[in-house]
Image 1 (cartoon, rainbow, N blue to C red):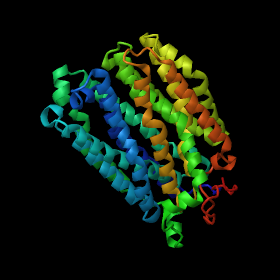
Image 2: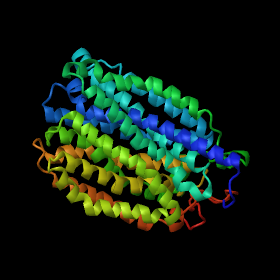
Image 3: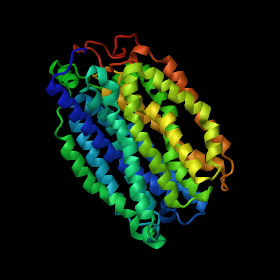
Length: 451
């Protein structure tokens, strides 16, 4: 698609990008509020019968169960997204997330109903995971499939900006409630951010309902070329692309969850920082990160996603050990600058383009399923275990930090091998197939050979 878009098309593209940004911001706000609460208060509220270290492990384990549900959500909502349409599916995932998050804020704690408290917490966390599993891929397609060909990376970064923006909002809100007296925080203060999920979802639904279906999907539907069983087609005919999509997630996921989730616990318990200080550090780093995302996406539209992504992963490998060494200095200024630099150079560089790169691996008839499954399975493999493994390997006294650097290096190497294995055409400029869409499942969108 090389023609200049009309004013109407440009307006539609901007509206679609805004809907993706707002929707994913709300989704990730809801999702990250749980991670922040898991790091700071859930151990005391839902697992008080064990020692402090074990309670944190249990709390991080409940954080991880959402990743078990994400592939299920990706498969279910991916099916409907490829069969019925992107917009209707995204409305459903947003409503599910808002309901699950709000209900967490209504949960009684262990002191009230005993073991049923963590059981219900896990159930609602699974629903959150299913919603995110179906959300991300659809939000990416909403932006990418409406985008002008010369700005696919920039528009594809819209849902990516929602992630750090959701993190900033969640940590800001949790910082405010964490400043409450301990008794107030543990009785009612922690519930406020979760109850906000009921309100935020209404805002997101109004915006999302105002966006039309993409031309790519409309053509498929009008021509009767939608896939009858998208999940089957992905697993049997585009499984190589699926593996590549999963491998891309390694470095960016490990870096992000070490900083956004595990660091909060580590800074409070091993480095001796106040909870509010740790939250402010993450908030600052995430703010700079979200400002850097569109800049790197714009740069990728000019230089190519391969180059920007590779540079970010290489930085991760080189900086992994120095990062943890500097963090362990315990100096607030040093820690803040170190965390911020890692978020920008290791996360923003890769996260800005991974959405459009992943979408570009799949034909539009299975793109929702393929993109969603790549992200969900990547999260299950690389994101879910990260805080739990990190908490386990540093030990109760928090002194054994070098395995964390090793974990980041391994993740970076996996992503480097993946980007080397990808067809260059699948991650260059336009992540959609030509207008006629006449490319069989299993080929790259730019006309490259099957992966």
